[in-house]
Image (tube, rainbow, N blue to C red):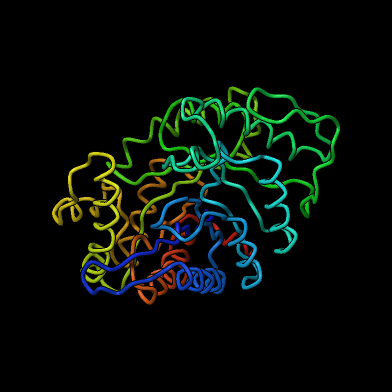
Length: 350
């Protein structure tokens, strides 16, 4: 199993300590996180895309290009690229550039996005939310398949026999589809034979099992090679030297994020009791000691049979020193224990 981290590069003020981190400092911290993740042998370092004041990264390819310069082995991915409101030609060119800078380590994780700010910002209609993604994904895949592009679509440019450059190191980029649990998105990934990443950030992970079963069934029925099957699980994670320390350190910044988003979406405020319940074995949060998080990753693997696990680290205004310790523990304690239990090795070292 591949094990890695992803982050949205959150900025803000810690609700208890008053410690503040702005965009400049957060991007510097991001490079240190990438270097550490590489150093401790993690397989993937991924950066999300948001167009909001509470996140520092709106251009993942730029951040990943910088990360390519401070890392040697780790795969560099978006998490996600909001393809619906972007230009597939530019997305491909940007990530092909990251691929060349990194010696062939770039990957695109395409999704529709959990926020909508990019749609009006770039002049797109939210009524076209799904059709934009579907058409642009097809265009991106065609660009990835060969350097000469002929294309005509309802929401994209008409292009006649034009080259798209530069090309990545191995000719093509890995393209994943990120989904949040809608059957239509799952079916699309399976039919196209694309690796799928499923985000589980609430509820009980076991409730998502029907989606992964559906993905496998559609993937196989479509005639794709099951030896190339890849399924990722993305979850909120925090690790400390003890279970109690992990819960105490993570609750305040995590609750700040959930309350802020909750005000926009009509969710009730997150209480400490709800938070603690979510950290139990059957809950969505992987928060605790290295041993607890290892056990929970293996528990979810029994449910999903996933080939990748990505931990969303440094949520909210979490202090940088704590985020770095969590990454260190994931790489030096959790990942080796998971690989040993599953009889697998690190993808970047094999």
